[in-house]
Length: 298
Image (cartoon, rainbow, N blue to C red):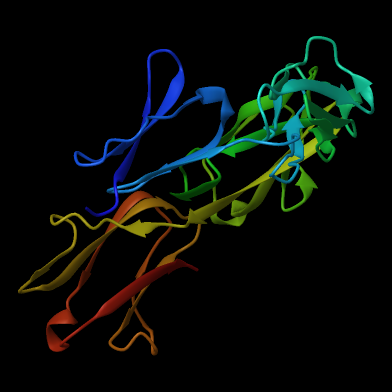
């Protein structure tokens, strides 16, 4: 006759039904209250349910929580064993009034709660057990810099700002460039206009409140100028290779270099200081099978 195929199903009355279907050998169908099931799995032809029994036991390891001041912290633990199981949360050994579920949610967490140990007591008719303590760590604040990295051409505007600031204010701000305070940069955002190559570097902001401070970092890369790669500005003609530099804010002469192997670079053109865009024509480009270019400010 073969073995029956077991199917699990949850009924409207809240019970789990185990249906060993076999037309030639019908069996009595057992049911279990859903709150007695501690684990469930299913395959193509069979199902599996673990029914809790015995005194309560916590199968998982305690998990600590780290949150920013002013946010929420959630602790959760579930015991296995004979149902029904009752729960009671405690903090540092003292019961928390009304905390009798498998989850404990702390709202608007304050720094003075840091270091508290939260435990869950589970009990049924056969015994009592307590899970390992779960510790709460509270950061003074939490935030990010947006964007975390900027790459732009000279003369443009680069702006950094703070996002997702969580904590207990009032807040104070100080922006830094390469670990040096930027004079007057004490707002939640930093805007740099007409940036130059010497302003490239690591930018950071320190945010402080009554409980401590936190720092986030970002980078700024300023290209002195870039090649305009549109088809109307970089093209090969019978007269040579035409190239256009864009975003030029040069206070000194600009030099265009050429190479055939990316190793040896020779200066081929020099242009006086300029702002905006500069057009070059390399009339010797027709003499080489390949040609590479770079430009610098003198």
